[in-house]
Image 1 (tube, rainbow, N blue to C red):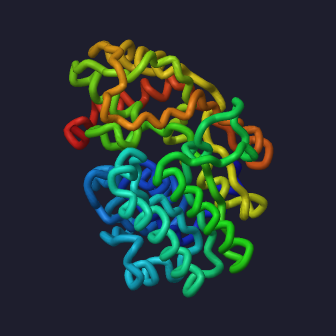
Image 2: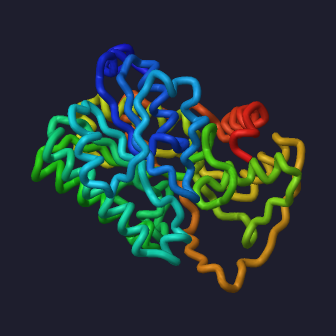
Length: 332
């Protein structure tokens, strides 16, 4: 990270919603290390990824608010006076959005609308970073996928992400709120919950292998996916917020490399040295929303910002395994 961007955070007030999860807590650690005054807001709701251990080493030097982005009073107070706001709070499962679309809309759209309205009212100068999803694209027409690829979301989770993204654009163009928007590939890494596969399938598979369980893959596992390591994502978010030319922009965020799903699982089993893999048919009651191979075209972000991914999938998996071997008691 360039020195001028690092210096940007010295003395800045940074608010992170969803700050006890994998992404939010990693941004909290990095922003604090860069000299920012950090505040975290997290609703601490199951089955999401909030984990107080994620901020254990800095908990006494940051502010932690247990609160919900849908709470108008709490959020207005939280955003007041903040310089940079990273909005990572979300309902994280596209499958759960199918079974409870109202909850997904309430958190992933209405909740974000509330945050933006609070910012407009009491913190209009703040820089706001939002995390979207590769699932916004829906069925893939070509690879690698650039930001101009059509958006054809197939689940409530995906289309609420699209609607929220458009809302952020509206607040940028109409209310002059400086926003930066990301469409993230498949994230994984340290500080992620390991209990279920609703958020990071890589982390879930690592947990299964570490327990000596069988990793079950639906279908043939030939689909390609783009996996992005958490620490690389963290740098991208911090760099974008500190770069005025990024305001109002949408960026794909991934590694730019496609890996077969089965190869990812094999890398995990080999790296852990435990577990095995079984290929099974798609369950009859499981709504298959496969969108085809997905690889991020990251040429826009790498050409416009001083950022590029530096962690290969093999190294990222190795680093993630080492983290959980050390701290598994806090995640299993």
